[in-house]
Amino acid sequence: MTALAPTLQAFFVSRLGRQRDASPHTVDSYRHAFRLLLAYAEAQTGNRSSRMDLADLDAVLVSGFLDHLEDDRGSSVASRNTRLAAVHSFFRFASYQHPEHAETIQQVLAIPRKKTQSIPRSFLTSTEMDAVVSAPDLSTWCGRRDHVLLVVALRTGAHRAALSRRPDRHRRARQVSGQESQAPRHPARQIDGRDCARLAGRTPR
Image 1 (cartoon, helix red, strand yellow):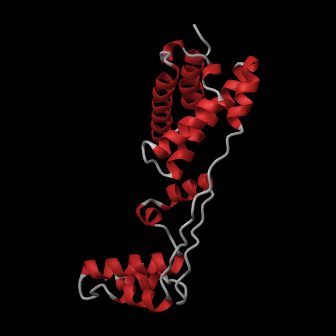
Image 2: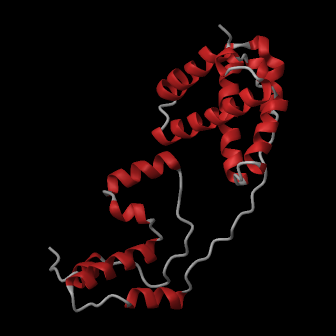
Image 3: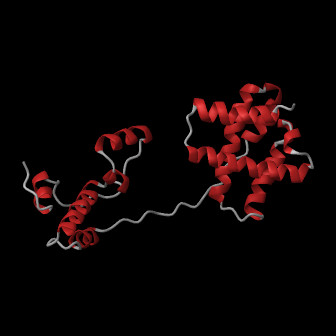
């Protein structure tokens, strides 16, 4: 048995599944990346994936695979970088398991990511914020509810997910991810809990 098959299995079962507790989405993404890579390697080398060794997945083959994704499959640069991230993660894991393949692993890890064009974010102006807040019909309960949600979102810069979760769960999620909203806050004064209750048609305690 070659080194590739048991190392790949250990990567998905031990590394991703147990050590990193990777999300199902990450595991599916990595699995799909290696399905594509192994299919490409079989076509290029003529060897079945079950008989391949780590040395068969060298930097030349991986680079050709990345070009194949863009040129033949029409993948975007972002998708190409995602597949490369999966390959890099596996080869970093393999570097501790098989130091005898250190040169091949080092060359694969040296393959760089491609730069992607970042689309500038657009935010609402103060006038547009006022128009959005004024849109709900305050004569109905649903309108008052929507108005309160919009005021909270615009004045705090809260994400949509934050408005649909319990505060404690959202706080834990932000502590783990470290992400903060960069959206500009509504210039109006801070929210008063009594104002929210009044707008929702309820009497605060």
